[in-house]
View 1 (spheres, one colour):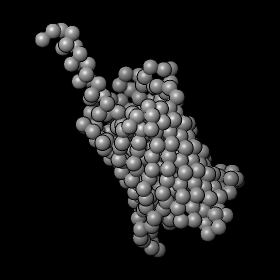
View 2 (cartoon, helix red, strand yellow):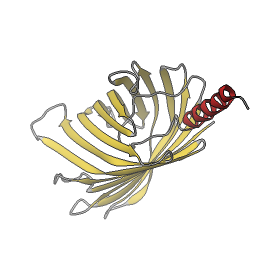
View 3 (cartoon, one colour):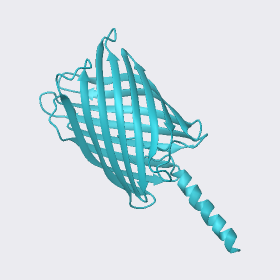
Amino acid sequence: MKPALRVGIFVAAILSALSSFGGARHFTFLYEANTSASGSLELENWVTWRHATGPGRFDQVEFRHELEYGVTDKLQASIYLADWFYKSDPEQSGSTYSDTAVELIYNFTNPVVDPVGLSIYGELRVGDRLIELESKLISQKNFGPLILAYNATLESVWEGSDLAEREGEFIQALGASYEISPRVSAGIELLHEFVFPEWRDTEKIRNFFVGPNVSYRRGNWFVTITALAQATDTQDEPDFQLRTIFGMGF
């Protein structure tokens, strides 16, 4: 076999492997700047367990089922078919439909070849007596096997029987993930939340969560898990969160 042909086959194999991992997530509480390839379709299933102790103790398991489509190489669209959760506390327990959502992500720059990868994100959630708008600035930089990501998120929520209850939230999220092997990555995620009931800051609600993550990729599927512990002492907020995202490309 000619050397040039061998090189061509080797490069094609590498590109094929990379493309099979293209939609894999390294984080679960952060988004990465890259978007799906044009024409690609992916199904992602999210499961998040939130646990709180003390007087307001509860356990809540949330489920999201996302269909993600690459409209172009720069634009990605998603629909969350039905978000729902199961909650158990000392007074009651049961399952509840939360909302259905649509999401768009537009990528400006690449985290590998450009100084920094940048994308913008928008999501609309509509549910039973609920409307939520979420916007996000996503930045990322890859240094070989090391991925650094930062998200700045602004959320606006209207809920209640006449949507009169309002709340705003600003979230900063920072993550690092190191590729131990082509299939396995591990790292850390940090969340810093500023909560504004009725869009006022009189209560000075600040939440901080930190914890490790691990991601495994194989063929056209991946699974990523993050465990976060609350470093502050905010009542009615989870003391522990565990999120798993399982994705499969088609």
